[in-house]
Structures are given as structure tokens and as C-alpha cells.
Amino acid sequence: MKNLAMSQIMAGANFWDAPGHSMAGSNDYAMRRKIFAWIKAHENTFYQPRTPISPIGVYFSPQTRNYFADEFIASYRGILILLMQAHLEFQVVTPRTLAGFQGRTLVLPDVRVMSDGEKSLLRQYAGSGRTLVITGENDAQLGDAQNVVRIGERVGAEYFAALQKNFGAATPDQAKEFLGKLKDESHVRVFASPLMATSIAQVEGKPHVFFANFAGLKGGVNPMQTPQTGVRVAVTGVSKPRGFFLPFMGEVSSVDGVAGSDGVTFTLPPIEKGAVFWWE
Image (cartoon, rainbow, N blue to C red; front, side, top):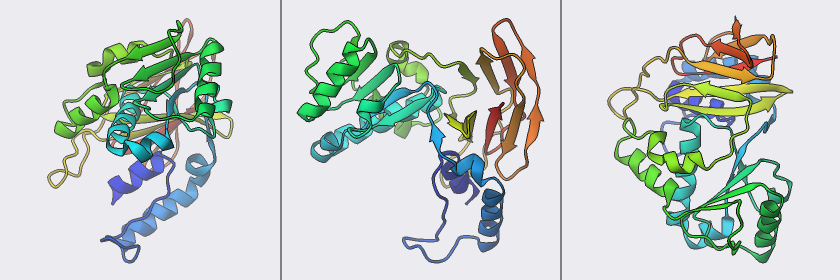
């Protein structure tokens, strides 16, 4: 139950547990009460709106999902997991939010069906000097613009297949070409194992990094993570920020940063299941 709660909370989703395919009952009522009490004590950290800082966009195409569900979902999931394991900030972009997306890079993962309105907005996006990275098949009809990067392979689907085959062995290094095409302009750098998923966002005006540790987990065999040590967060463009660390089911502690020539680096306490770190 703790792993379920941790992964949902760190993603900003609502937590609930049930022993089967219904909303009734619980796997552990006492633990559920403890988890909800902890959420209540820190609900602003996890459930105030998370706003983007400097994200890489990943396009969710409802029309492609409707007509090519298997192909699109595999590509879409794979790209999202790849960015989480590479510790890059991302933002899901939809037809409704495309016009307002401010990130410098937008990924189209095997997006095969688009409306004329979507194509027009994508042309405007590329025309503004920002980068479109297209993987797999695509229906955008964007021509040969310099800032439109085409990768013929279905990067996301291939990475998702590798994860399903052997989660512990799949790493972002398998998609170096794709990652190298992304214009990551974030002032936040996270140094951690790819078995640690991260989500970067601003909460109540403060940058936050949410960590979910999956190292060592194996379904039906081992429910206990391998604690992650030496995780670092480097922040450029700041002088003397105060760092704060909240482990899953724990309490907030302060973290001192080490100043460098272009910013500050924080070395975090060991992360067992999950944690969130922020600075101000």
C-alpha cells in the first residue's frame, strides 16, 4: 500500500486503496489512516496546483488515441517515462492547451491524426523559432523547417517495450539521440539513478522536485526499494536559497546547499520510497 500511495502522491494524484476491483474495503485500514493523516499535514505541498517552470512538452493526441490506440499509447507512455527517468521537466500538452504552451520544445510521439486547427497551431509554434521533435509517424505536414526535428524510430514505443522486458536494465542511454535533440533550458539539474522518477514543477511560487524511487522493486517478489543516496539537485542563477526535504511519511528537514560559480548544489538525504525537495 505504501508504494501505491507514494507513487500516486508524488505524481499529484489522489490516493485510494482497495483489496479488489471495487472502491470498498482496504488492504490495511490502519495504514490507510496514517497515510491520510500525513497527506493532511502536507496537502499544500502535494495538492496545490503544480505549474510549469521550463518544461519539455509531450503532445497527447485524442484523435490518434481513438484510431491508433495501441501504437500511440505505447509511444506516449514511453516518452513520458523516459523524461521522468532522465530527470527532465515535462508538461502534457493537449489540443486545448496547445495555443498557450510556452515551452521551447514540444514532442509529438507517433501522432498520426490531427485536425486542421492542430496543424495550424503547430505551424505557428514552429514558426516562432521553437523546436518540434517528431517521432514515428506524423500527420502534421510541417515541411522541412529547420527547427522541426524528425526521428523515424518510434522512440517512445521502443523504450516502453524495453521497460516491459526488463525494467531494471532499461535506461535513458538507450535514447541518447532523442534526448540530444531536446532543448532543455531549465535552471534545475537533478543527478540521480534512472530508477528514480522525478517530476519538476512550481508549487505556491517555489520550485519543487518530486521523487519516486522504484529501485529494487519486483512485483510479487520484493516490495522494498533500495534506498538512493547521493542524490543531488543543482540550481543555477541563485545565490543563497534555503532547501527543504520531505520524505514520504516523514517530516520536513532543512538542507544546506554548496555555492558554486553559477549556482548552488544540494545533496539530499537518502531517499527510501519517495520524497519532495524544494527551495526558496
